[in-house]
Image (cartoon, rainbow, N blue to C red; front, side, top):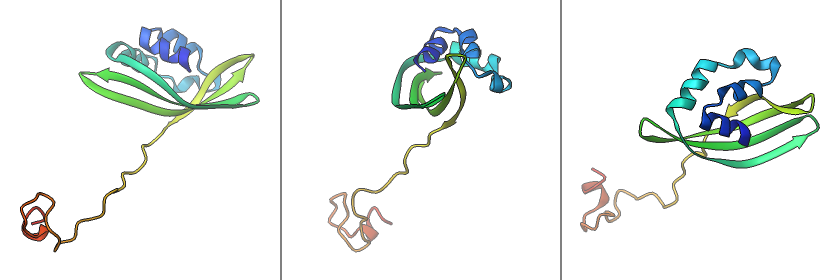
Length: 127
């Protein structure tokens, strides 16, 4: 995984293609990969988990990059297969962030407003 990230970061898209499982070669859009590699500024790789079971393995990672001035993250759970002694990228799926949850209790309509106005929430910020 780290070598594929480095290939994207340095523009070595030929390596990215060469380390793709031949069974899934038609899924590779080499021009799009080359454009993404060239136009992004690569800021780092975080490997969250990795596991292997025989000739199959998974790696969950986040690739951090900047594109057109915007900081972005690509989080993926990648599946690798060992083919003739080499680990090759087989497939992957995007990992969605956990849903947002409220940590503080919900403010009732008749409670004092949180802004400090001494008015009821429904007559102030809740209106």
